[in-house]
Image (cartoon, rainbow, N blue to C red; front, top):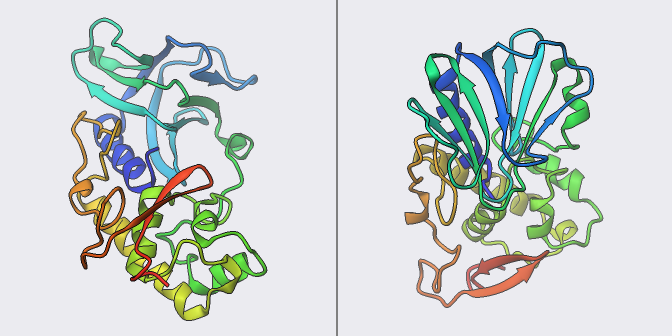
Length: 267
């Protein structure tokens, strides 16, 4: 699933490609991919794409006339800008049709991704309860201490909980915990403030590094130009056999997701 760096990279590309442009229609080719709130005005289009922001793993495009389009890529979704669109593509689930006969394809092999059109003043009804953003000032060791107090769940699972930290995902939590020297098996409530500070620091650093190179492409993720990100070349533990110090890594399942970690480097 695309995580914060991937979603932000796609959003930035989308903003560059269509900001200020008119959306003439959104065509849906797979049932349930495009959801429309029940109180939308008629006619729906055209609408100008005015603002672009991210909340967790959700992209929110503010449209003229008080509407918003929420895009959630989920596991395999991708957006591809196309100045010369033709027939419906393989696995294309929806298409954002633009002026000048251009388009943005929403391609999703697993079909879990969603587009939600709603009134901007009702956005809160269509977004889940999300925690603090890891690149914003509110993400601090003190915040984590309070949020994790008394919790027995492993720290890896807790950091993946979007109600605690919005946008962190499996790849970057594995990487941040390795850099911080913290075992993913540690109980959340057992971590000292010094250890939480290390998690905050390394989470910020690894996210910033991934953003600088367009995110991580391991399977389906692509940028808006359908090219891959580059951070997969800089991963230290995720899907690796050895850590940078040459120690064998362990690979276990936590909450149904793979965890790569070094028992010697991570305490």
